[in-house]
Amino acid sequence: MADALHDGCPALEVLATGPMTTVQDLGRPGRGHLGVGRSGAADRGALRLANRLLANPEGAAALEVTLGGLAARARGDLLITLTGAACPASVVDAAGRARPIGHQSVERLPDGATLRLGMPRRGLRTYVAVRGGLAVEEVLGSRATDVLAGLGPDRPEAGSLLPVGPPPAAFPMVELAPAAEAPPGEPVLRVVPGPRDDWFRPGALEALCAEPYEVTMESNRVGMRLRGRPLERSREGELPPEGMVPGALQVPPSGQPTLFLADHPVTGGYPVIAVVRERDVDQAAQIRPGQRVRFRLSRGEPS
Image 1: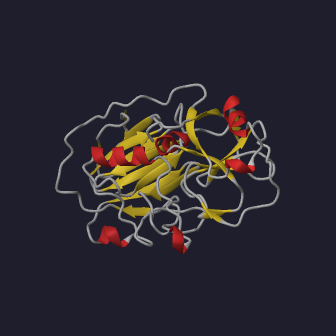
Image 2 (image 1 turned 30 degrees about the vertical axis):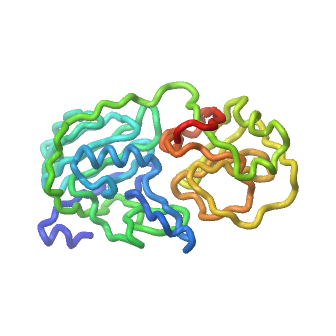
């Protein structure tokens, strides 16, 4: 990656990563039959919005920052934007003068200046996009880091240099995209039944939706482990491996469901009682450990 500077190409120099920072795009769809999951941004809508603000292709690679803590210095003049979980952010120039910057707005990061992110008040994952996209090496057609499979670029660390691609021909037409902050309280995720709800005792779906579940500390990009009312099975044993999708609620013998997210396994052997609707998976990606979440049975609603 350091060769990018020798060629006169702009780059982001990572100074600090916070709890977890990865490079993500829209992933590797269509390779499940080869044992390769889609991966990509956990909050796909936030990544798409960031790239639209900068006139990048929607799938351009950006940084996914978990719970803030990122510091990155510009090597060359850059245009950036932040989406997803809103956090305190500032640009510190070479003389040490700091200015706050907005969320979901197009901002200039001059050569030598440093971007710093604090912890978001609500939400979990913030996206930092650069006009031109991050031009790290592709693996199987994507620049996404899959933490379960170990595919894609290495996770950035202090000292990493991330090259930035050439700017697109189009120029950003807006400077700010208004969007509501994640609401406080218990998020509600819509679910559709099955495909293996027949493996559970009558009333299990209703039990899933009756009380909130707590998101445990074992949650990550692979899945959200939940703690609450156990979902009791009517059948013993395990299934042969079946294909999994983001949003699947898989239930192991403990009865405590796991909600699969971006880096979920391609197959699994525990029954899936329900699947979170696609539009709500992005919302799930912003729920923090320790929060409580509710499910609502959704039949016949648009996805």
